Structure formats: C-alpha cells, structure tokens
Length: 259
Image (cartoon, rainbow, N blue to C red; front, side, top):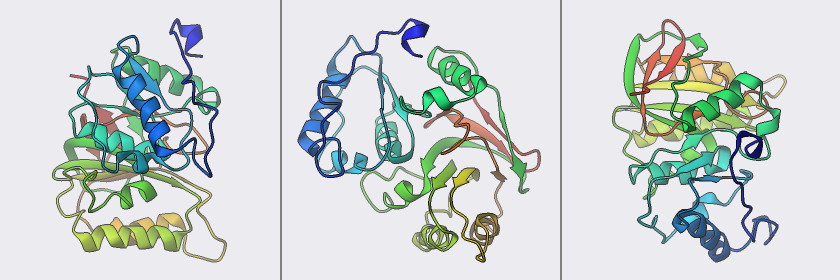
C-alpha cells in the first residue's frame, strides 16, 4: 500500500530474526532502529508489529541526533513514540505494516494525509462532559503507558490530553492500572482524556469496561470523550504524538491542530 502510493520501502535485513519472544536481541534491534534513523535516504520508520519489547530498547540508550523523521506504530510502540516525543519529534500513533490493509479507506487516507502535510478531520465519539480543553496529545496503549510511569521515558504530563486504548485486559486489570495512575498523581495535571477501543476486555458477569473507566476517571472533572475510532481490532485512526489538540467532552470530539 505504501509502495502503491509511490514510496520506496526497504525491509531491515534483520526483520525475520527471532530471539525468544522478541524480534532479535536488544543490541540487534537497536542497531536496526539506529540504521533507519541515521540513513538519510529514509524519511520514516514504519513499525511492522507491536507485541512487546519496545521499552527494552530504551534502557541505557538515547535517541541519536538525526534529522526529524516519522516513526509510525501503536500498541507496544507507545514506549518509542513517547520517548521520541521528548526529543521534540512527533511520531504517529497509527497502523503498523501488518494492520494497514485491514483499515477502512478513510483511516488509510487519514494516515497518508497527515504524513504528507494535510489536515485531518476531527474524530467523533461519546462525550462524557467536562467542557472543552486544549493540550498536547499523547496517544498510548494503556498497559504500556502504565509501565512507563516513574521511568525516564515518562514525559511531562502537565497540560496534556491522554488518549488511551487497549486489548485483552480484563476490567479489574484496567481498574488496577488506572488506580496506579491515580495513586502516583499522574492524572492531577492533565487536561483531558480521549478513550479509544478496548478490545476483548469484557469478562461476562463482571463490571463492564465502560463502568470501570467511568468509576476510575469519571470524577476527575476534566473533558472526557469515549468510543473514539482508534485502537486494536477495528479502525485505528492515526493520531499525532505531542501536537496540540482540542478535546470537547460535551460535543464528543477530538480535533488535531494542523498549524
């Protein structure tokens, strides 16, 4: 799909490697990432999958000083996106190479529009109230972001709009994660929360995910919008990382500032 649009796509020589549950050892995966960063022919790094292992690359490692280029991915790639954003480079929380073909046409076009310099339309969801706010957008997989709390990879959360999605997490585990966010004080200075899809997270007979989310964040007194079309197992609308966004908890919208 990228090639059909006129892009040159090269696969890293190590892309078929495997080491335990990872795509190669940490040094080899870092080397592949650095190669893509330093090679001036490349304007973007397209992640092939999520899974697990991104945060391991960031231990005792810093991003090299290279020209700004796109990093595109989601789920486990949250750790890389959040870390890169601290250097002033905005990546894209969006479809990886192995999920792009499953996206609806509008979502594919949205991704290409953003990386090619065009504005993208607001996303519509279900507003939980709280008015309207503006802040720096930090999209994330909730589980991965939770495990970044208190580390050097955790960005400054003051004045941000968090955008969370997840997959395969029972309501009690989502409760546990959000309780940790509350107890660390990480939610005290944020301006709003945008909620995407929480796929395969329901356990029959238990509290629903929506009930859990309302219980754990509904009392924060900030704009919250749920049911936005991003995350696993469905449309995964591209969301820029670290750019200004507008969240309307009354109208149920998330708008990206294109300026």
